[in-house]
Image (cartoon, rainbow, N blue to C red; front, side, top):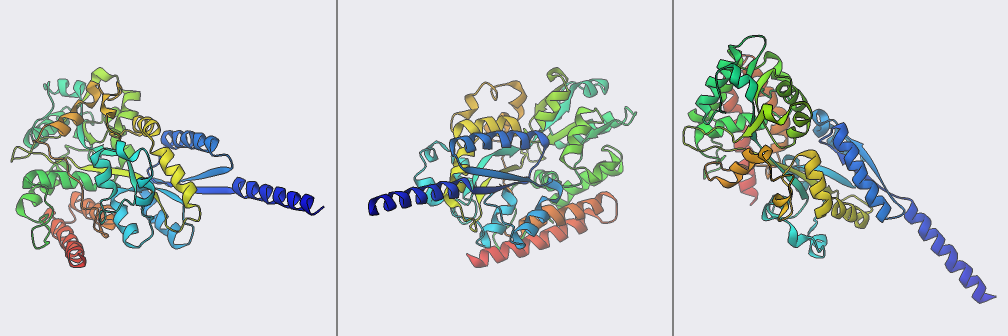
Length: 422
């Protein structure tokens, strides 16, 4: 009888364990959102759920324009996801507040770790050399150009220098009919564009001097902002572009409103759906006066919040999404350079559509530039300060010098704080 009771008890415990497992629900928050990528992400998660019976994943998709504030509100209110899509510029903020899980113990036992590219390892550990995230790919800026609009304006090649870029924009704007040269991004996500023009005129991608002072208010950097302010004032860019984010600039390009667009590979998704390949191409970013160019390189990836109560399951989800098969698939859908060695040999990437990006990767005149996202304050700078200041500059409410001084002062304080902490 006793043995029967023990057996029944063991069976009950087993059923309870299975029930608990069936109740395991992971919360994943997506912050760079579009209907297509959300749908594909859910498809990848469905395969994870199939391989891990009893584990369910709920996806919350935040609109990118308000994602920074919405995620911060969620976290502050205790509604903390287990896994989050972490943009590079938010990493330091959350890591510094000890809100992210150190993934090093998991990576040590993960068979796939040795297959990650050096850049994936480097930038996943950008904050204090600690792997708080696994990047899922890299966003590198290159220049889309509309062959038909260029031909109408009497041009057959994309601009090779900043000067040629400005001249080409003016020629296309002179066509009339609402056509402009450049799809300026003045709304959410505008920071990279401003910084690239500033660095090109500086001839360097060093953001600070040895004492920690920002160089963004040097005369050369101010000239970079002045170029954009003049283009806006003179009608070489659309007037409503002062508020444009990613979707608007991409639509501006494929609709023929503007003939040039600096963007990452993710823009190819929408553009290729609406423009035949023979009507546009992707060139490397124009070179500055120094003969160099500094395309910004951004990235995002998967991170785990330290408050997660399901860390093992959360890691399994991150490992699944970061596996070679899933990552290659995801990179093709969202438009990033993959994180695993040898991915560039895939036929999808070995095409002329990626020529501009691979020129920038292989030619030393183009120096890929990572933003100073190791600064805790950089996320607020990129998502708030630079956007409002840039818009005020474009609208003529402030001078480029005034805006550059504000940016330099803010970043200098952040850099000196970081240096002192070290």
